Length: 97
Image (cartoon, rainbow, N blue to C red; front, side, top):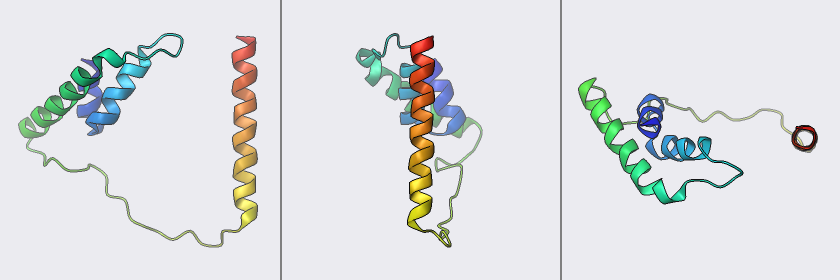
């Protein structure tokens, strides 16, 4: 049910189904034995939802390709440092929790 709801809401049956399996997991063990059923449920739910609401089966969002102006290696280094800081915060949170 959750896989179908996420697939219909976000318009992404594969991502919604796998996310639904990941949310219900414990200790990092995902429910891979139900993956085929969840993906099938997501596909069917998306098709039924789109056909009943008379929406086309296509992506909801249109992304335009814009060029990033004025990038340099310093931006990449800053992004890497922010990523490492986030990893450190997650490590500390997991250790203290």
